[in-house]
Length: 222
Image (cartoon, rainbow, N blue to C red):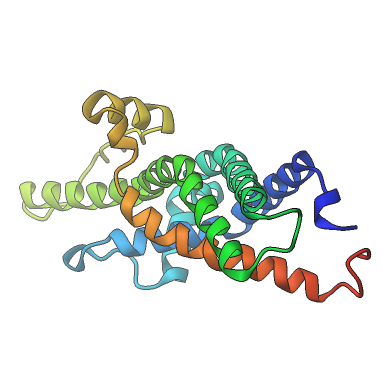
């Protein structure tokens, strides 16, 4: 079956399901990456990725590794929908009489798709990273509070452990960003996101289309 026979809704459902599975599989690694990147040299809590994951499970439970995943799971489907729909739209606009696109035009269509997807990707990344790092910040504050209490008591063991501050939710973060910075607060880092997603889409879409085509004995067969 040729690509043109695959409906856009089918592609969107396919991309959405693939995105949900991908987020579920790799999210703990992404969380460890975020926490390792954000820790300061003078306040290093994690020695490696495995150390970060082990400490996260001990302090926050198994589902602590998926802190912030709800944002990705909610927005990954519209992100994929925008990316796939935009790529199809630009490919259609760039094609002439249904002829096969040249590689530069395929890359241009991918560029357009990557540019459009950051409408969803940038706020999604902003909220996800802040939620992912909330556990590290809470643990760091707990350690500093315990150290301060020990110093105040002359080295004696603290008798009462201070309750951990409540961790923010995606709704709270969104509300705070909109109240303090407006819509621009959700799009902080837009330039960096464009520099990541546009080149990725320029490479990804043409590469996928051409590798997929290599597996077909003829244009009429799968």
